[in-house]
Length: 502
Image 1 (cartoon, one colour):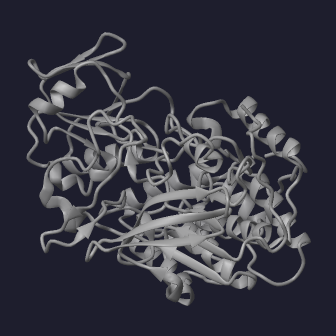
Image 2 (spheres, rainbow, N blue to C red):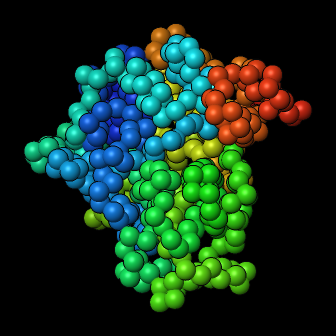
């Protein structure tokens, strides 16, 4: 249903205080933009970790002693479940991240850079996780005073009478609670927190029988951890983590690794003859330790199943229901239902029904660091009144266009090339038209568009070069000169930006 009993509009000067939930790349991007906008009295940033960086924080050495998956359940397909912090060996609370020991980016260095901040000279073409984290921390230092670290948002509610949000937080170090009232909320928690482990017949009983047998990519650290595994290893999923982890396992262990997939990957990955592509899983039999695939093949003596099946859109601190007459809370309770998308948004960001609530970082197949500045700059101008929203009718048309073209499921937030560039540049155009002052996102230029267009073959060439030479290339020219890469004919340098969508 589109229309609620109460319509919420943005009025000039209405928003004076803002809560930002999360201080990862998107939280940092929007916070810097809000600060530079200079039109808000209070900006409160709540981050449950000890520092900036979000998923680029490497937590595996702190939490590997647990042995079992950190997923909220197995199977895990309920977006309303909540991830609780694990305790380190020293007894400090910590939240697992998806970063693993040998992680590097799928995005070239130039496309990972914040505006006016460059990676150091000599940084590999595809930076390592350590280099990315340091880059993020450099960007974040000027906004540190706005952030409350080790502080988890546990509940957000809306008061229709005052048009304010109550944000309940818990200090994870001393367990004290506090309530903060604000005019607007920007949710920037990232969406790599709640592992999605799809249900299959026999999966639950398998996990109960062998609690250390099933894990998720969020638990993965290094292929050496699997050196003592005698039975078969199945990696489930063929997206970024599935391709990368199966390649690491095959290269390190030098033994067959089954990769169960439903479709070809849109993202780059290394190739190895020990990776055995097989069909999707039909059922699991814990008694015989066999896994049957949808094509009838049966894999015997399975010891490890590693689900690289993505994450649920989970915002557990929003209301799951609302009392009679609580219109704002009811709107929030309907935003996430299945966990595959956030419903009823304009620009993949702003709640159409409640425009003082925004979600950063939802689009997939984008360049997150670059987009974080653009989304943040656009939202800051909307909430300050420098960018006027179109009519609700136009906002709904954008939402309906996305449903029609992307679908109603997890693909709703997909922005595949060139849609990712069109989306960013459309927001950048509105940012420019709002006039001088404030923070600006990075504009897409011809050479960067060409890099984006060739991203998959470029990363695959980089992986092969590293495999053959044990060297990390520092430039595209290095790969070209050594015969590992040539520009694809369709690597365009120009993308037309539509006025309406995406």
